[in-house]
Image (cartoon, rainbow, N blue to C red; front, side, top):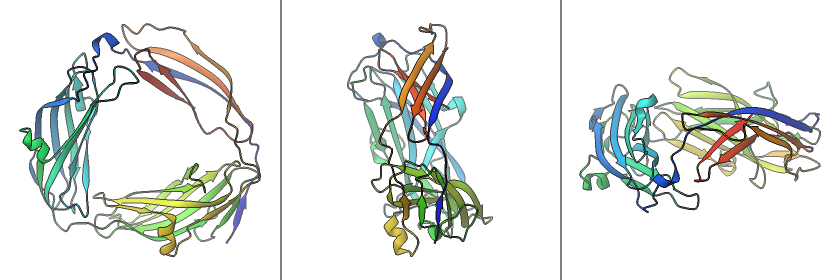
Length: 360
């Protein structure tokens, strides 16, 4: 086992200039809080039966939603497998500008969404699930939303299912075969303790995951502080077999000098090609015989928030009647204990609409 430490200066002065495109928004006089969720007026699924035994197939869903009072805010759609013991799903998404077309007042929208059903999913009668919500006229008002699936759509006179024929079904989640914290640049020199009192420290992680049928789609590992208030995400490279049934990941993350002392615990999340998911806590890793804690040692915790030294934006007013306008924002922030992680600015309108910009 080993330890890691580094020295650095923990003072940062942050200066950023960002450009914000402010879009024209609908006035509050055209928005009525009727307390009603949007409604579906048309819905089609194509095809309603598909065979993915040998290759993936696409399913397209088109529907129209209307609202009597407020503009449509957000709609989503997915296909859900019939096996409740091993649930699988397919998210339907849009294609460029054709995904959503709305009226000038935003109260009627045509949605055109597409999803890919892959081989090795569970065969049977998959249910379509739709949800839509409107935009509140005032910030204090709730959003009105509907969620309809399967037989609920059929009861309204719409199609609600897709019949899927598949080959060998994959109902098992990915399996972690190796997992260890390592010195950066190594896959074998293990690490169980880091010292961050002198500055940020970069930690290495090596792990291997397998999936016997549909293959690994993605994995994510985070490291949580003892109070779960701070999280660090590992990023890096992967090396997979041609069918992605075995993937090894070499990743790193950095803990700042103000990181809380104590035993930090990893959480592993992986999913395969048909959306079977593995979520492993530190206890799960311990039961598999893998390292499940990383000891972090620091002397002085940072309990002081960043201080705003300067803030300005220009121009003080914009006219968006004929199109978007640009607002330039500049801020200076000081954090004397650690490194500033991020900063953002949010502009709010009188009607509760908001536009934000992240500063780099």
